[in-house]
Length: 363
Image (cartoon, rainbow, N blue to C red; front, side):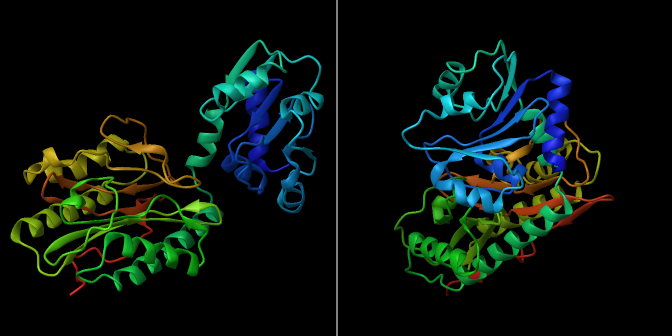
């Protein structure tokens, strides 16, 4: 039994849980090495007090689970069976307390489960899973560095295709083609290519808008590699920029550097956000930095921690998150510069290496 699953058994003992059910596919992968997207079908890793864990998977995933899962006991259900009835058949007859992922299990799923399992206590199991995931192991860091290396290669290839007259969607298509060609599992979120005024929308929607000379061009992209996500943003100049856009770029670049400098063990996430935000406020652009500074990164593109001014949780060695200050001026445009960083024993390591100085492309 691996240490991650053993940690969950220890949590069960502390919380006096009879059964623990993991249903989020990413967590099943994290705990067993087996990944599938079950779509509407039931998937679960089941821990029963005093027994070995088992997987319950859709029958079409049985062979893959047998080949990749570290959990040796695997049961399957067919499309014509009620998976909750199948699950009940493998559980003790009397259950008092049941642990579930409350943030993942839907109301419909809970109603179906509780109609077959009459537990008196339903406990949330998010805390031990989050606590394990927030500290990246050396093996996870190697995988994430691979995902970052791939996305930076993708970004280099995509930038070469930028020309005045091509559309935002032309560049999206090129970037996502390169993601597959260069060895990733695909994008970790919807790729953003935003030109001109649209760069001032933090989560704008790429379209067939034509890229023009003299504009800002914001590219925000990431990939999954071996189940782990990368995330990077760079903003470019398509030809020569006016003075205001150059100033905005420098404001964001300095905030990015100040945020990174503030990262070290045992400081609050609020203090990191403050260091970057103060840099922007002091330059007169505080009203245009409307987002948090960053977010955790790992199995998911957005996970704990959230790097914002109210988060008084403290950093620990092995935490990995983004630093992505931005200035977004409605009707004009915006700049975002995003890096992926990890807290080390004595400071910070910046995992992204793509150049950050203002670069002219496309002309």
